Image 1 (tube, rainbow, N blue to C red):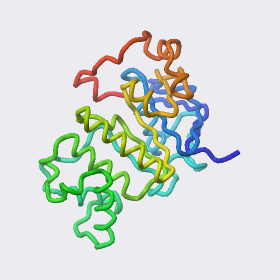
Image 2: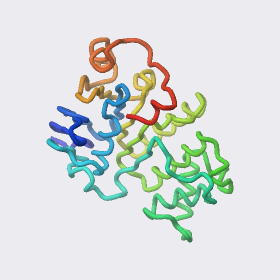
Image 3: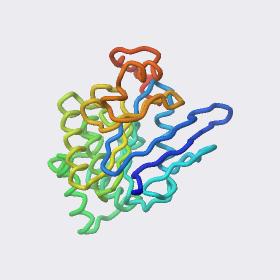
Length: 251
């Protein structure tokens, strides 16, 4: 059997006395596009933390390209968080932020090869025209594109994205998904993305994982996004309700 891009078996995560995830089990082949859906508090971001090696499971396992989560070479996995911790007043440029993705630390000087690599990633993300614009002057959607370039810069085999469309208008969101699809096709990459948008999952994902602390559905998007699976995850079936600002900070 070929090694899966992501394989999770019997995963359980406890945060103190709280069971954040239990009985999570799925396998995603290389070049798959997995949308992770579920209500607030379902454990979606906790699952991403497990895959990044930041949250040890209480039971079960998670493997990425055959290695325990967190043990892969740094260049194999790219990550875009939902909430950016960067101080928007920090006098930094997009090029510096992208080069930090190469270095793993902030670059106080930039080598020529790093500059060329970062500029290529920024061009792919459509942000090469903003090289001289301080990060604090970028819109939310533009900043998200810079983070996308940062995740592209080392050409990772796996991209983990937590609500990547946050702060984007409809046109910017459509462009972002086009960029992700192009990157996936060009590099045979695998994508795992948390989203609250069922339509995005239907149109872009090859597979869907439905969570509500427990796994209520996994499989091809067209099969999983049916009434019974959604009802088990959300308790109802209908359109996705817009989140409040307070809800947006929770998984």
